[in-house]
Image (tube, rainbow over all chains, first blue to last red; front, side, top):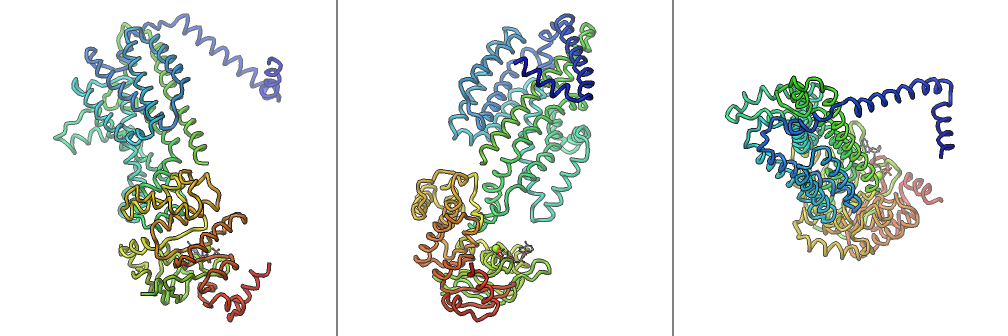
Length: 373
Length: 252
Ligand SMILES: Nc1ncnc2c1ncn2[C@@H]1O[C@H](COP(=O)(O)OP(=O)(O)OP(=O)(O)O)[C@@H](O)[C@H]1O
Ligand SMILES: [Mg+2]
């Protein structure tokens, strides 16, 4: 074993003179940085700020006595994510152990008073996962169920006032709503872009190209100032306007992914369906679209990660997302010297969510490649 | 009424490339017509015009009692006849073109259910009967990717038959197959011919052509140069180019 790793490092790290030089500077440098970071994290950092401000980080200024509403929202999100997962990866008993581990970590971070709620959420997640893993019929209701779920979240979260939404929950909700709504819009735009009616084609192309050539933050801001003018009677909350902006922006990107998928479907598929007498609508819906989506599922999952990482931009319209909630805590003079602790927590949470999504996308890619053989 | 396909002076262009030149051809019900010719001569284009996968620019084309609209009318939205024609005309492709995300049975039932509005049970019963006929009943619930080329092509034939077509078009149905699988597909086609199905077939299988065809159509550079009974055509072609074509393909 030691001999093996010695050979390995001899080949990979000390093979050529330049490698030696690079290794001799980079390896000690990295080790020193890690040592410093760990020394700080276990020696000097005062982590008590994280559990103390956890509620603000998670749900922002949402009233504490209404926190049960956010737990319901989290439970619904867990059900939807679990159900989506089950469509591609069947639940196995070893996953139960993994979930128990996640539960233990979360509880150790947040304290025992969340044990019951967290257990409930994970049980719901697992149940939805098991359901779609083993009852194929239930997969058909996934799309209507996710729309119903989103509406239910809005219904349960709205009474205290949508202006109070914040924290990690806001970031996740924004990501989820944008991901779910931009899919149908993106699909329509992609079909519009290759429609045989030139007016539709031009409108779709123009929309996609315009959205893709301006910054997200600008679109979000524009929509935020435009919506009250366009729909004065609705009096929409900032959160909703932000979600509209994100959805309109990311629909253009989804459209481009879907379009690349549509192009990957061989012409013969359409020709065969046409010669069976099927209508263009049926051909697109049942023959072309399912094959196109299969190809673009991995990039679409990557797109979800983009949305999540772009969510902090909603500070421009005055919302308190996860990152902003962290800054809000630091604005309290009492916590002024805890900057590194809070930002480390933010960094690791983003890193964790991001690598989880990337991991799922990788698995999905491998899974679909296997399935299409 | 006995004529199912009637082409008169049909012309087809790809841009300035004149691909079909004043084609006259009529096919009677129950007849098997085999189209042969060199690569690029326009065989595929000819039979793809019959179900409107390709558009023609001028001339006239009557299929199964409906007038196929010319390109100009189709681009202006005149496609009612097209739908009616396609319901009654099946087509089998060189590359099978089965739907890879659907099982064999779903491949066969989707058009009868969507186009002919049959119930799922009825469509599935028909599908299983057809699969039995092409010898693939055991594979009904597999996906196309799990079948061999010859099996896929037989499923494709069953899929077309499920729409109860009056006319079947075949565009080189065996050209993408390994030699040992050609026979099983040709057998199915032979049976169809014996059952009285009207067929237009493009093929390079000259022995099969001679055996099943009522008439052979020889096409060269987009023009029909000779139409004749198989024995006459193969033993004694009148056209010079047909003769040299046959000499080339029958030599080996
Ligand atoms: N989409 C297209 N655009 C332009 N030219 C085309 C197109 N499809 C076919 N052609 C041309 O039309 C002519 C006839 O083609 P077609 O496919 O009908 O020939 P074929 O007799 O079926 O040949 P093969 O035996 O190779 O299948 C060829 O010269 C070909 O290059
Ligand atoms: Mg051809």
